[in-house]
Amino acid sequence: MSLTAIASTTQEIKLDTRTKQRLLREFRQIQQLRQQKAELEAKIKASVNTIAEIRGATGQMSLEIEGFKTTLVASTQSRFNKKKFAAIGGDLGLYEEAMEIVPKKPYELVTCPSDTESEE
Image 1: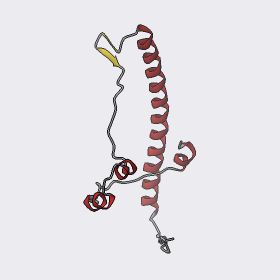
Image 2: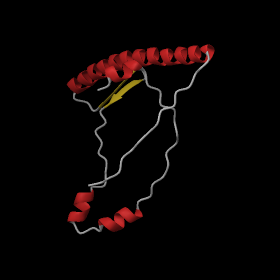
Image 3: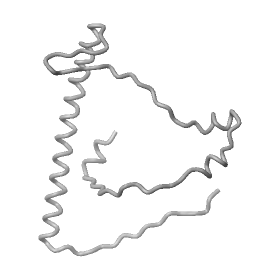
Image 4: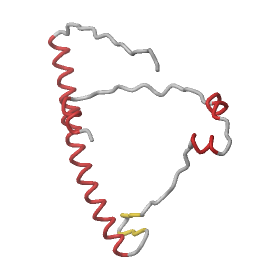
């Protein structure tokens, strides 16, 4: 059992009215664009499903019409399974020792009040 804990602090600052208004305007714009994006993605998904049904009914794996193309992509991927590696006699300690932690590219995370309501 670990006896560690994670703590964070919050600092309250005063923003001038202009800065606050600019931030709120940009936040609201992002919120609105994300709502539009979600609606568009739902419509796109419905169209893709319809196209897949039509393609499936033809019995073909791929169709092309006037430059438009649809193809059923059914691929596989490989991934490392630690339990299976250990079961076949692999040395997990050696594997863990060879792992490197590398930083990812930093990015700006922006969340809107409606993001938590519609997350799946």
